[in-house]
Amino acid sequence: QVQLVESGGGLVQAGGSLRLSCVASGSTFSINGMGWYRQAPGKQRELVAVVTRGGNTNYVDSVKGRFTISGDNAMNTVYLQMNSLKLEDTAVYFCYAVTNKGSTYWGQGTQVTVSS
Image (cartoon, rainbow, N blue to C red; front, side, top):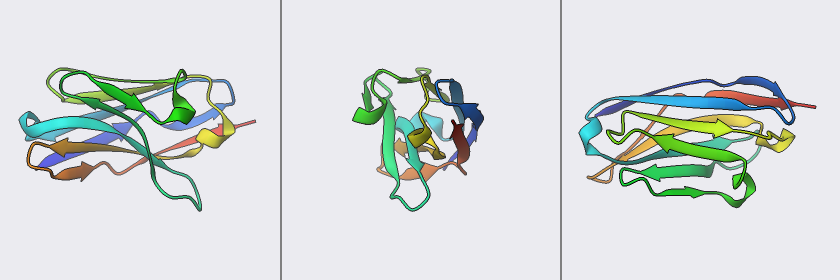
């Protein structure tokens, strides 16, 4: 079992920055990768960024060059640095972790609101 707790969401003006954090506990040794999804009102949940235990990262095109995902080697904590935020980045952001057995765990979500 893995437990995930997110923090760092909030209200920010367009062009501003926020950093999301996700702390994992429990069987963190089993985590192969962690990342962030987001879900805006009326839209499907979409993958934003992912980082593997080996340090490989991947991003949805809409955030490339603006967001940076990072994590420690132990897969205990993952961060999402969000710069140059846009109105369309407004969403609930969910941290997730995938284990070496293919199980997926989710955090409770944190709201990010970008205002004009």
